[in-house]
Length: 391
Image (cartoon, rainbow, N blue to C red):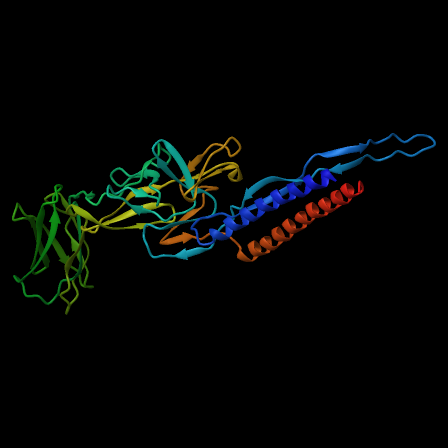
C-alpha cells in the first residue's frame, strides 16, 4: 500500500510537469520564433517479488513478478517544426524558411534564435530585442567575404558609395538625312571624373556632303574628331573609334534616316559619390543598399547557424538557445547553403504551437492528475481500514 502511495505521488509530479509544459506552450502562442515542447514519461524501477525460473523436464519456466514503483519524466523535447509566416512590412524583420538559426552576440557569448524581430540601434548595429548583435559578414567595397570570421552586422547611415569615373558613353537615335550641309546638331551629357567632379561631354554633328563630321570634347578641352559616312540605306559608318578625354564613345547605334531627329547620348557609366537612402534584404541574407547616386551595392550578409542535434540546445530565455554537450558545435553558413534555409525580409516566423493539441494535452494532464490523486485517496482509505482492525 505504501508503494501505491508513492506511485500516486510520482504520477502527480509527472502530470504537474506536463501541465507546466503545456501552459508554457499556450502562453507563448504569439511569441515569434517560439518552438513548442512536449513531455515524455517512463516508468521508474520495479521491485522484484519473484524471480524467473528455468524450464525443466517436468515443469515449465516461470516469469518474473515485478511491482512498478511509479512514473517519471523521461525528457522534455522541443519541436523545431516550421512556424507559419506573418507579414509585418518592416524591412528589419526577418524569417528563416527551413533549418538554421540567426546568430547573435552578447559580450563574448553566442546565442542562437529563430526570432527575427530585429532593429538598428544608435550605432547602426542590427540587434535583437534583448540587445544581442546579429552576426554575419560586412562587405568591403561592395564585395562580400562569405565564410570568413563573423562580425557585427551594421548599417551606418553615413555610408557612402564612392564616385566612379566615366570611361564609356553611348549614343543612340537618328540624325536627319535631309539636314542642310553645314548645319549642326549638338548634344551634351554630364560625365564624371574619378573624384566625382561633374564634367560635360559635348558632341557636335556637322552635316557634310558625304555624311557627318563628329567633334567631341570634355569641358571645352582638346576635341576628338571622326566622320560618319552616309549610306544609301540610311545607316552611318564611322571612320574609326571615338575616344575623348579617356571616354570611349560608341556611335554604332546612330542612324541617318530621313525625317527623324532623335540622336542623344543615351548612357554613360560614371557617377558622383552618393549617400545611403534605403536597403533591401535578399533571400541569401544580403543587405543591398540603394544610394543617392543610383548605385546599388552589397553592404553585409547575415549568417545562419546550425547544429547536429537541435533538440539538444538549451533555452536561455528571450527566444534564444545555447549549445550543450549533446547539441554539437555551431556551424555557420550563408542562407541558401545546404541545411541552412533561406531568409525572407519583412516577415516573422510565428510560434509552432498547435492550440487544439495543447488544449487536448491539458485535458489529458488534468485527468491523469485526477487519476493519480485517486490512487492516493484509495490507498489512504485502505490504510485507514488497516488501522481500524485494532478496534
